Length: 431
Image (cartoon, rainbow, N blue to C red):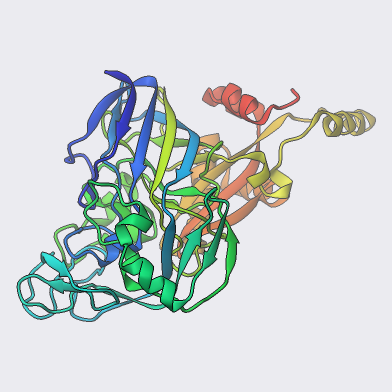
């Protein structure tokens, strides 16, 4: 058993109870993940069986089914010098049912075909057996972005520079040595030139493995719904979908350094994994994808015994909370106490908590988040909706179906759950 573990190896796109894990790491120990770029590279790589390429999961000492794991995100360091992304379109004939999962050559029909990379551009990835273009996705509008030395800003480049970068994909992506993907930089896209953005790195994938073997990109209520009775080997039942997923594929932009994620344990040892880091993203990931990067992420993990969860809880940085959910400060609470005394009311101390909701659509995800909150806090869904309305918000993590349900939760409830000290310390509450 180790108090610190470094992980720089990857799955072939599948996670679950049958995937061999590393570890265990000690309860209270630290893991450093060297993550490979997520969405686009794995999407265009015919041999990978998921839409991402996540790090091999790590077991945690003393983590049993029905527990939860607290993941403290200590640092996310951007390693890539450039990234590329854009809006996708699947290519007919290159997959069976799901282009992220069941890839095949459109000509010789070989499943998950071995391939060669010939030159640059969208036709560079070709079946080794028959020579046909075999990437299941094309980018219909996209860009290539370079980062400054401090990884503070990104700037999209012109076609000439995008093509130069496409010829040096491993160098510019800083692709980990053990990654098997084709970096998306090979496409050389430059449909937007001179667009600047702030680098604000976060983890698109962070959490625990599901209790069923599935593609990594589908460990969420929206993408996971594609697996129900699917026409490929990774099909699941509706019961498995509702019971076994852990929503590790969040794409919530506040899952960044300084935040705390509490994830359910649905297999023995939890299986902490990370991947799909992004340089930046606005709420919703409305283009379907964003700037996939190689990153080094450091986390600390602790086990919460007998803390059963259906999906993750997030404690973002205070600045990432919606306005009404921000924690009360002493001067404010003193004024509230004064107002309460005037009307002979005892104000109830509260703390901000975000519940992750997921489902096939945003409306489904919101309803799921309300239900998860009601179950966890042992209150009615109607009360959850009222509290969210006046002390929180519903924010979009990812289209089509990941949301953050924020609300101020009474400290007495958090004490009953055993996480009051954790939340109070994180937000430096005045009571």
